[in-house]
Amino acid sequence: MFESLTDKLNSVFSKLKSRGKLSEKDIKSGLREIRLALLEADVNYKIVKDFIKSVEIKSLGERVQKSLTPGQQIVKIVNEELVQLMTCDVEEKPLPKNRTSKLLIVGLQGSGKTTACGKLALHYKKNGYEPILVAADVYRPAAIKQLEMLGKSIDIPVYTEDTTKVTRIAKGALKYAAKEFRNLVIFDTAGRLHVDEKMMEEVEDLAKVISPDQILYVADAMTGQDAVNSAKEFNERLDLTGIILTKLDGDARGGAALSVRAVTGKPISFVSVGEKLSDLEAFHPDRIASRILGMGDMLTLIEKAEAVFEEDEAEKLQKKLQKNLFTLDDFLDQLRKMQNMGPMDEILKMLPGSNSKLMKNIKVDENEIKHIEAIILAMTLKEREHPDIINGSRRHRIAQGSGTSLQRVNQLLKQFDQMKKMMKRFSKGHFDMGKQMFPM
Image 1: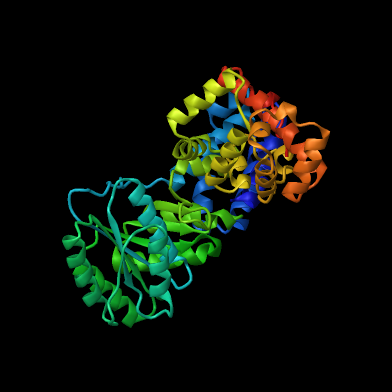
Image 2: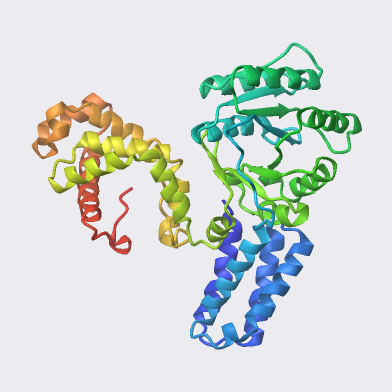
């Protein structure tokens, strides 16, 4: 996410922070590079111009000139301006649970609307809502089947009708929701161009029939300014309430994320950061700004961990560590839970300093966990509980039984021992991130 922009900005900041006092020439030279980096990231030209002007005014003021760390002060100013750029003044109100709320999902073809509907349904289900999905895309072949498969995978009903009239489908869906006591209805619609008058009139009629609480535009982040311009056109016809940015995990530039709020005047409500239905995050401007500047995103990382690791399980684990009862089964369970937090490469990027050369050289092989699982399952219960009994002959047997090598078995036992020591220190409150090794 934003790798290209992050690298370029950090190159500028490194130069500025390497100097003691900064002259006006130094600051303007740095800002020129920042402007170029933003333009190359496909950020709207006018937005870049206003952004640089605001940063320049603040950077040439006393805050930087009198600071002992002027380079760091400029980083803080850029961070503040990035947050401001992506923050919407209109406060989003939570959907009530005591009545039926309606979400209308719109956008271009291929932007990921149907998958976004599934992700939204799962997100709200986790937050105590009773959603249903409505198949109102009557044009794309297999669109209804795709939505039904998504609904089945997350145990959420999908309402369909054998008709091409979307207003009729909508009325039937609302009656069904009331009958089944469902308090959230999510309408998946066909992809359409804003210049297609007939299609735009159709979605406008649909909006009149259902009176949606929210109209969310799904934008493909990787298309940059094309996504922003289309969102603007849709907003003029439908008065959007928010935007969902999809494929943000594959967006190395960041142009859409940095432009769409300023161009449309509407907030980014959610971002899709992966292919799994659970890979949907509420949008937080301060956290995205932190990621862009290579500062990590500890709050999102903590939230992901809290969603996976139960509090009582963490307490049991801590007691096991203190009593030296941490087993290879526990080790495997922790690895599986970490996998549920998302791709390890993305998790590592949320750590502060993730833009450093050391972190970038770390390559995470997702298949490695499969090998670890095979090795541990090839052990006896006694060996998993007491790894110290695993001698040479046992290691050979485990390697053969797991279809791996003796080297992999030795590596796993070494990693287990290192993780056990590290987690024990963490449980005692002596964890120092700067002194830990990351065995990969």
